[in-house]
Amino acid sequence: MLNTALLEQEFGYMKGHVYVNSSLVGMPPERVKAACRVFMDDYVATFNDSIKSDLLAKRVRAKENIANLINAAPQEIIFAKNTTEGNSIIAMGYSELKPGTNVIIADSEFPNALNPWINAHQRRGFDLKVYRTTNGQIPAQDIINMMDSQTKVVAISAVQSGWGYFADLKAIGMECRRRGIVLAVDAFQALGRMQIDVQDCCIDYLACGAFKALMGTWGAAFIYCHPQLIEKIAPCTAGYQGAKSHVLAPYVTEEFDKIDFWDDVRKLEAGSQCTYSIESMSLGIELLLELGMDEVERHLLELERYLRGKLENLPLDVVTPADPARMSGMIVLRFPPELTGLAKEIVEREHIHLTLRDGYIRMTFAVFNTKEDMDVLYRALEELCQAIPAKT
Image (cartoon, rainbow, N blue to C red; front, side, top):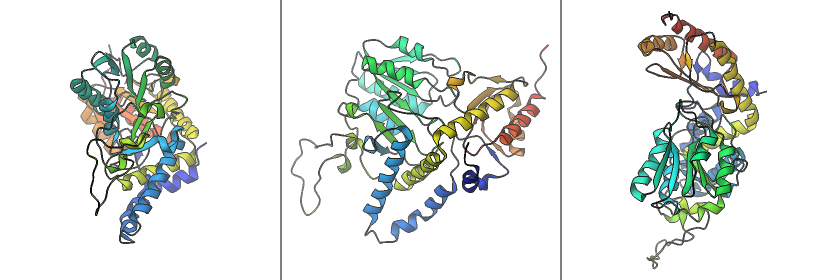
């Protein structure tokens, strides 16, 4: 069971609101809010005398927390600006992707998970094999059936952003590992809500941003890269952070033919890092680890099952699959688009925060949500359904 006292301490400020929109932006706990408030004061407190050591310590701590979250080693983690950059690094840098080879993707992916591969396909000449989904469902066996001798990467989101489908990463990953195919995972819609073990799932590469269920803020993401993969990824950008050595004044650079990159994942880092956002992500992850990711996942799936049971009484099209193994703590439903204005009025009046588009609602649950929140959601949806014409 989740530590309700801790949750009250961290999220008490949300009373009176039902927030089920973490797929868009997560809400930060008090520890993250407090750290962000004092970051700049701490930053300037020593007049730069200890900035490097202080910021480095925060980044080291963040890598340790991330590693604990996904069952990796801290030295297998680096930071990026966002998930899009993380996806682009492997799409543009993986040396095995050449004309005649292919990457498997799905049509229902969020553009930031999809466009890096389309861009790399245009620039590098490899083929894209596109899985055509129904309501964002991507059965593992269908992906396995698409693999051939020229498949070099399967690029998939752990949870489909617009549909809530939780991919069977382990089944796909085990087959990829058997065939020598790289499994590259966009985990932005999953981490912080669902457990992902990169070792158990045979994940070779994973990217995830800070500001959704990890409860950080904008400006930072992390990348996990399997040690055996890193030698086959060429850096897309280069700075001194990715090199074993660099020259500072009063000396000048003498070697202009090559950069002596690190042999590990550090070679993919370039430029300064947004430690402000990295620390916010780190503290959000610390809270998740204190709560226990097994308890977090269990809680979110209980909420999903509870609301699903109530929704069976309503004339709504719940498009997220009911298969317990594929649930992700997200429910997506469709309703008559002409009632979108009414839906907006209802959720605003009831202080409900969710993703609402024409005839489309997405509700994504977080650690602070309760069954009482689900009851509020049900009553709002019940009111909406009263305006749906009865079928004859």
